[in-house]
Image (cartoon, rainbow, N blue to C red; front, side):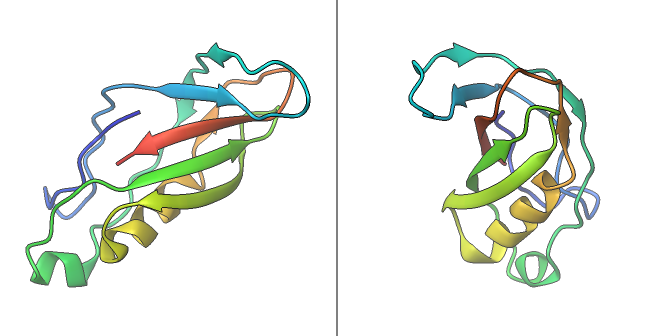
Length: 108
């Protein structure tokens, strides 16, 4: 899922442009599937980023449990001031259930 982190109304934008799902490697074959995002919450735009007029993209990888909740989020790239806001935004998200853990690469 790709969206831009920009200062728009004081919140991170909600636009989702793409979704990439990679199954975690647990000895099984890696397959690309699509898991529907069921719940998403907005995060406040960081005050420091706003004062710096900072914009950019942050890439994170979310490890999803079979019930669709986020187990872990790792920062994979992006400005450090924006990265923590992206992590905080993704943690409460919920995807549809699947038979096993999976990984989502999210660019905000």
